[in-house]
Amino acid sequence: MATGVAYERAMGAVAQEFRSDNLRRKAERIAAIEKTFCYSRFAESAGYCYEQLRAAGLAEVELIKLPADGRTAYMDFIMPQAWDAEDAELEVIEPGATSLPLIDYKAMPLSLANRCAPTPPEGIIAEVITVEQRQQMESAAG
Image 1 (spheres, rainbow, N blue to C red):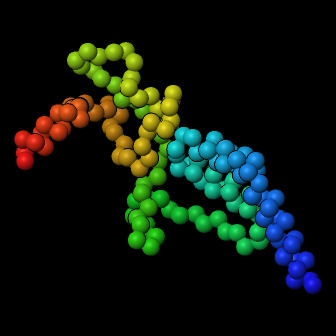
Image 2 (cartoon, rainbow, N blue to C red; image 1 turned 180 degrees about the horizontal axis):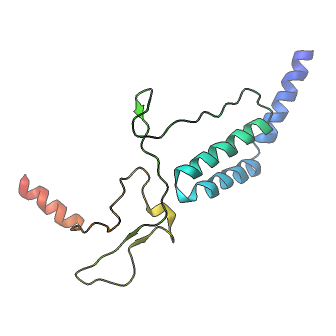
Image 3 (cartoon, rainbow, N blue to C red; image 1 turned 90 degrees about the vertical axis):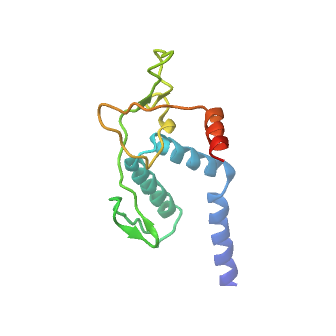
């Protein structure tokens, strides 16, 4: 009988934690923390998840800090070098340049891809081609 009571108590705790409104609120909190897509925010999100698991009554929760140094490997994955973005823009400078950037990290943080290499402070000027131009190049090589 005691086993049945313990089971019912455990299932009640699970049901409480897995209510859709509760899950949604926690998922929205995680999304708000990680919206800048930076490693310091991932660490904050991991801390939040740790706290939530402990608050739910899980005793054997562990928060493991992994060096993101571009050299340390975990299993078969090398942790990329961690960095936090402060600013990034992508703009067309010629021909037909506009005053508005195509991408502005401060306005849209998810426009910057995590794990991409940084550019030098002066930026990079590169040629951009359309999908059609790329397809023509593939056809010509073919």
